[in-house]
Image 1 (spheres, rainbow, N blue to C red):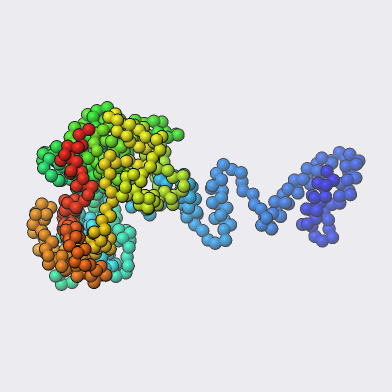
Image 2 (tube, rainbow, N blue to C red):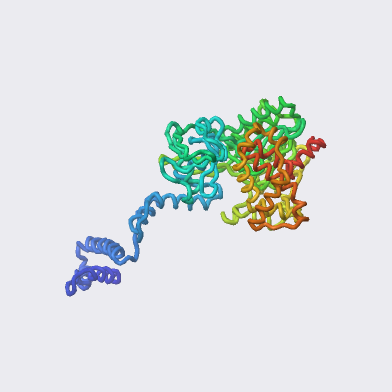
Length: 565
């Protein structure tokens, strides 16, 4: 007790003026000895005063600070940092960084979306956005219209492919190193609002001014649907959005009328989207009552989704193309078809995303996507790849696949027996890291096509095709559809010769032997790019597919009836 008195008295004396101690230990000791009736009160006063003064001293000297012991520790910390940090900080920025950092530690797919990023993240899944309705690219630091959206406000005003947008609302946007995102911010906007653009057009005597009334612009999940061969249809999907099922249903109706008996469903590069869209698309290919997918999480009870009797293509032969870019909802469709022995999966191992997110929208326009469950294919597979080594390793998975030889050799892929499952017909399928294809198609690495690979990888074929289309747009306009273009346009020897000279100036040399081996592939890519510039995807994919190994393997399988399971 005396030792405690010493500490408290010294604490009081620190704050007292020199020569004026607050009290004397001797007096307190004598009080204790005489059993003074007020001794407990004195002890309490001294003890409480010491604690308070200790807190004050700690605050003055910077040795410690005590935060309130409330439940909202995160809010308390943010307030403390905001009030005491050495530099000026925005509370909004602090909150967003805290949320982002927290979610990153959970899993790779729980994310925070700022208000500025919201539309960019959500518009592709909604099936529409509000804007002027043009596809564009930045060419020589100028916004160049690739194609106006059919039926959109720009097309209705007469804006054409090849037009250069030089000014927006009177302000120059050419030659100022503007970014794609900045262009979209200027051209997108609420339906009914106006934007003024000034356009340079070849042959026009000056800038052309247009006032465009923004409108709802549809976006499509389906790149293309067409009859690839007699009796064989082809559908390519780029994501799973709110309109995807309607697009697929309509395409199936059209292809069946055109005589489709077999189908190639191309999901390569499809990063997924809405779970419901995946379920509805899978329903088109599976029989009534067949399990499509089930989801389950710690705080979410199991939810089971089964096929109905409404599918348009439940019997015909089916090939699904997948690759390392096939993820999430696209893997749900692939997994359901594989697990029911409904079709053959062709290509390379898919991405491996088996986590389900729900979106929470905030009043400020931001949103949070939180993983709430895992999904499982009909055989019980969870195809989510591991993320235990952190976000950086998870995101560099493609690089590791490439380096370990998986992209070229199926045997490089190793799965433990614990991840092995069997389909009703006895096929072995795997979980724990994507959908394994039934038939492997390696990534092209043909050393004999070095010239082709160089001009494609450097973007020279794309750039040459763009310039060629721009110079010859009037002559190319008489191709009204993809069939006319495919049958009527040829990359002649003269066009190819011009390209070779162009590539040479850009630093890609050749010898005659190398050039002759690459000739057909380069010409095909040039034609495909020119077709896209004029007719969008309808002019691109039918040409490109003639040299696509995955597509050609799918055709081979279907023509040999190897998709009958």
